[in-house]
Image (cartoon, rainbow, N blue to C red; front, top):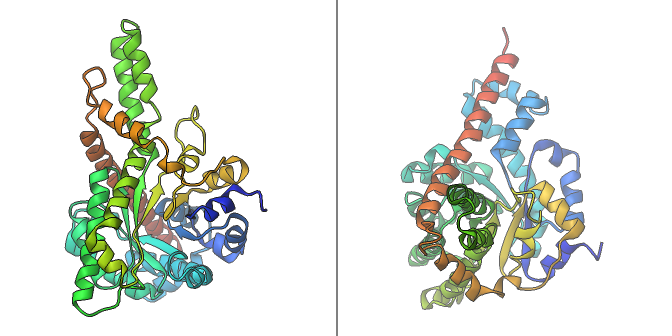
Length: 383
């Protein structure tokens, strides 16, 4: 157990969370075993996994039938099911929440993805979720869209823990950091405490490399073998942009926490908003399956891993402290090189496209989940 790389990562100041949650995992005791085995410090829920559990098992049937008898709508039944799972999981992670002084032990649940462009709708749903779940260690996921950031600010001001998700661009991360600060400042102005509030800024990784690599492959098809030097230069970029982007974001995090406005809040005992590495499963089999773990170990950060990546890391991660601080100048140079004529990749446009695609990738499983639940309701309803 002492040789488990995941436990060493914790010693280096990074918390490992898991992106995998369903009722069987909770009720079987497997989640508790995984907390002990892998040193899990938190967890995020995922509509796609929840949808499979509803569609392919009967574990939720009794609660669905109870919802039908109570005359609940499909959405109300959905909320009753997932809220029960989130409450139970919060209780499992409560000892970690208490032991860490509110740093870890969080369980994330996202607002309806259909609200990604609706500020007021997001605020209202965040309030409803936080109130209904009624656990100090629940964290509400709000997308990092222009419409989402004001909702983050309001939620933080009202004492709601927030996971700002779908961050791709460094500038979007900076917006997330300042939304947190403004929310805290508003809360201070109201005379409310801020030492029990927490937030993470979820910075996505593998989708960036997949998108950039796809653009490079298209470019290579066009140029053929006529320019071997350009081909070699393009190939050198593949699989490297996401980590470079994360390293630059971490430097911006350090700038934010050194700002006098942040320091004024820190003096009141507030928790830092930690960068959370998300989308950490490697999509290209030619790359290491733990590259987004090994290269991004950093103090005061979180890495949230899907189950396969979690197991892979426990088996063969090669960890070292604060590796994110290595090659920072090279990371800056790599991102700048994308603008050069022989590469000509518009990173800002790529990030904007990824955000739109990311919203869609949240919306589709959510809608599929609601369809599966609606089918189940029809099957279980009295004739």
